[in-house]
Image 1 (cartoon, one colour):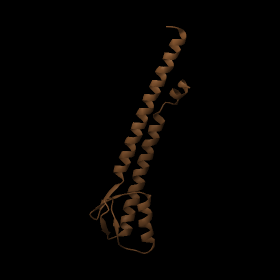
Image 2 (cartoon, rainbow, N blue to C red; image 1 turned 30 degrees about the horizontal axis):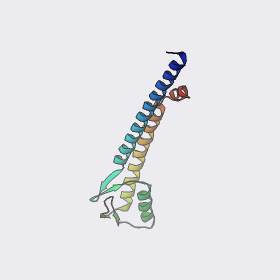
Image 3 (cartoon, rainbow, N blue to C red; image 1 turned 120 degrees about the vertical axis):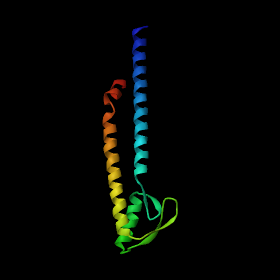
Image 4 (cartoon, rainbow, N blue to C red; image 1 turned 180 degrees about the horizontal axis):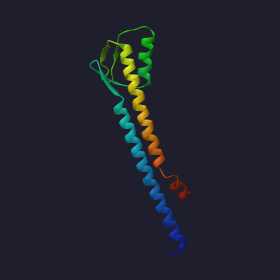
Length: 123
């Protein structure tokens, strides 16, 4: 095998390794997304809600309007009577920040585990 062929084979091997590393990274990233989506599922008052910024904002608006209770749709489009909107808002806001902070910390660990030098070796 000539020197040029060896060099090409090494570059191909590095590219394959990088591709596998990126595939593993993306799979782990998707697993984190699924984990946080599961964490952001909240059951209360006989309904199940997907906690997100939109729900928090909507409930916050109702509370700011002075509403104490109200009917909202859960993630299955079922009307659910929320008897204490302030308590509900506190619960979902707390859950949101706990879940998103955990996601952030896990994502930072995942990002730092990638080997930047592998990228540079290929270039």
